[in-house]
Length: 300
Image (cartoon, rainbow, N blue to C red; front, side, top):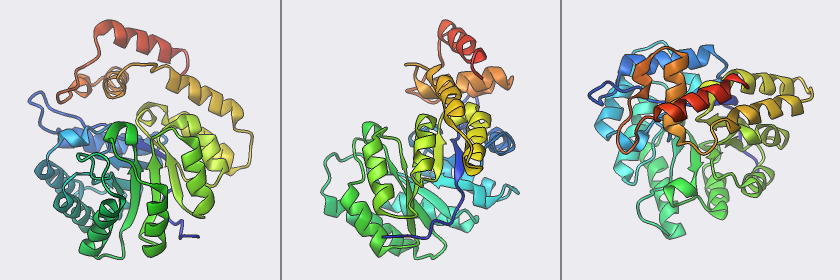
């Protein structure tokens, strides 16, 4: 089985969302962050992913933000929109909104509230979405993160859907950390744009024909990740760069990842607003932030 692998590959940041003190989205600051990421090592930016606190943001806020995003001159081919929701009409609305502003790539979580859904139900969810949107420009990637969502995309279903929607269903972000799962799909679906959810697996993913990484910590580690990606493209040795990237990722340890990434961005970019998060998240305490910054100083 093979699909058209066209589309941006390489280093994507799962971008943070910047909030005002009243917890509304700071649209200008968030869009400025996208610009900064694209100027600092990122091939692309994922909007409304896990790191962007997407599931704490309402449909109406997302649609309003996408309208504002559509008024910018950001390169649409370097953007991807997370559309995940348990409600199919919300997913359809977000997908259509993304396409309306010229962003063709969307990332879809499975409907995640009801656990152990029947495989036929997941199949229906994807088919009804694609058929309702009915736009040949759509490039759909699946988001596989069962540890967080409580629901994953079954391998056999993915293969069937790729076969039936070749050229529309083009890839996956796999944040499970299950290398066998990722490798199996890449080997069975040639051209499948597999993005690892962690830079730690970047070299292995590229070596097996994957697309790259979409990661929270790429908000900070993009320069080194991009250095590795370019070395890989030149067929140079990547092991030393991968070791450095692993050390950067390891500095975050067991800290809650979204508050940790936002804390470092607040400090490094001199913008305290990055520390604002919607509940249930809270900023890192002072000692954890200091220890994290000290650790990153040794490896970034």
